[in-house]
Image (cartoon, rainbow, N blue to C red; front, side, top):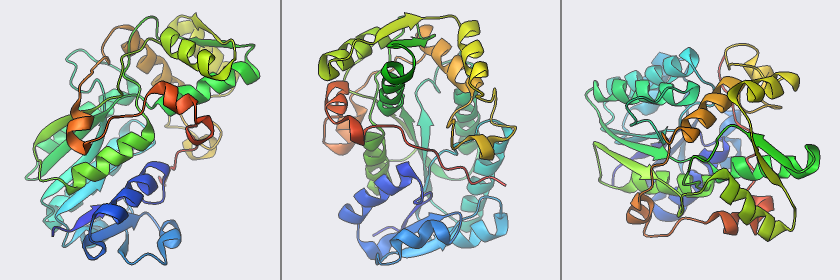
Length: 314
């Protein structure tokens, strides 16, 4: 069996993918990696090899990735030049170590010719960089996590007078559960597929208005979707202290705001423009399962909140 190395097992996404791999793949052919020994502590009693893979240590990464056939690279939670540098460092180390294939969690819209968002541009750049290297790849272009919108919905009835005000207009998104994305990631790592793009979409294309309607039906709340402009959205984020980018003070603010306003505003704009409405059955073909619906997630809301993101930059 091929050796699979899963980076980021200390994070939300990585830990969910790790659980699937532990159930499906021989433990002697699994390697779990995290940026520090502390990130591996919860796997101390699990019979898989554990390695430290610090993306700030190129030489250490080559050693960490040696003997690996398939490396899973979960995209970094920070955005911009720091993310590009960290992921480039990881990929260069994988190539130097002789890794055969990288499985990378990209994002919906990365294949759109005219896309221009703070978040997506990094993925477009990195996909292009990977294709230039002597390594096989699978790009998993995940739709927006439905959990992010579940959390936004909860915030609307708890803090903003039952108003969900965002700039997505009537654009559509095949909202997908993060759990399903992690499941697909594990299946992609186990597969023999290579040099392909796999779209990981939810089971239905929805506008935010339709999303909110489903949520209201399930929860009994009366949240209203309010369309706002990009400028109004920036003003709101500024008022609550959300950083414009992840360049400044990101590690300090990420625990309170696991996003930046440039990312959120330009992401919403792309949805409004119809640039992120990819809708396929790739998930079912890859996993043999149907993705969770938005209704199912609201029926189990406590287990489908977005949670925190793990930043491991300097």
